[in-house]
Length: 228
Image 1 (cartoon, one colour):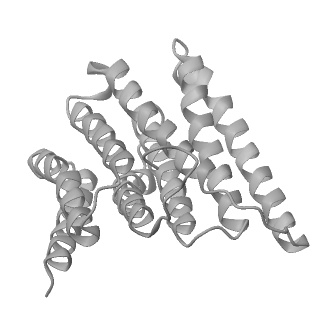
Image 2: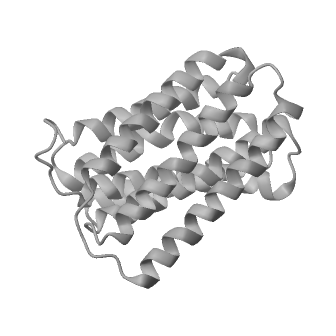
């Protein structure tokens, strides 16, 4: 077995442990798996591609900082958590925009876009309606937080439908998983931590990170921005 496959297997094991620790509230397991999850994933990426795509590594490290700070609890470090998370998401927007290609849009694809945009608009409206009830003192921050994630999925879904490179599929899947993971975390922290929310957060958290690395592995180098 190749080294990168061995490391991928290790990442999957750590991911499963992270999911189990989060679901059953095993603090030791959650802490250990959180500390190891992204470093092992970066190591897998390094062995798989043999060459760094530095912006993606920065994104993963920003998410890593956010996850480490979350171990102390969101309310212990709200600003650093939001800043590190926001910085990572903004770089993902750069990935999405530089990957756009011109292509003819067929009627079915246009309908798909309209359906997706309508769904995401409804999702934002529904979530925004809850914000004043559960976070009365930080409404603007919550709105921006949700809007960034929802618009990211809209942009990456559009990019994928415009017949961009295969990497756009992974970026779209990572964006969708990130949205599901973060909305589940929002419910877990501020509303009702039911069983679906408890499962969705760690599961899609792991899938989002893996999708980002697969996007970086299959991406085509862009000439629009230096380093991308």
